[in-house]
Length: 142
Length: 134
Image: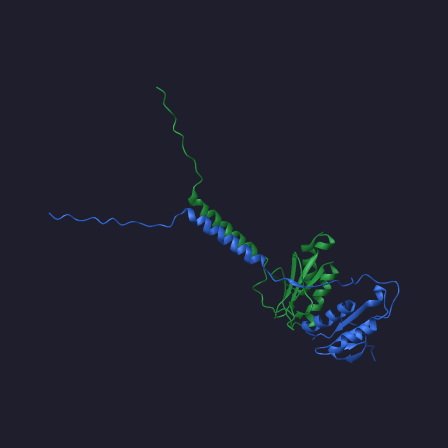
């Protein structure tokens, strides 16, 4: 009689005790990934709209269009803006005198706005934005 | 004759550790995604001087399609002030930081109302920018 040889097949399972360590390392990996966010930039404190100074002063006005800058109504090159603004702010010591009103056309891109407001900050001006007001006009009946 | 008691061994089953840790992993991933805006498409504007800012509890984002998001959740323009105010709560002056992430080509008609809304509720605005390459 021929004997059948039994082959012993071994079942190899990954050790269950290691799964805890693997998952724990995954948790740490995801938490580290989530916490590393490149959030650096520029702080900007805008005067609140309800803060009105008792005295009305003549403030510097900057108008922005899509690709141009105007300082008190005069168009100037972006490279010359910082010098012209510093000249305008010269001698102005009081905080309310250093307020620079920024008016932007609706199509002004954010990158352009950031460049100009950065120049104002560096020149020592205090940026205030002025949005376009909606004016209601009553047309008299003829 | 004295029969000694057999001390039974009570171990924490190591098999359960994997399941516990895996559930924790899912919990943290979902929690991170709920307040994350990394999936939104925007390119930061560049500036010469930027400083590393601390953490902020509120993040206002305007993406490349001019849509508004607060902590990754889409909102309307009129909802910004209310949402930011409720998220800031009664936080102290130095703890009212609001990250402002705007796509570099977004226009003033979209980002100016958001700036006005944040400053209206007393948020400390931080423009998230990238360093300008000289």
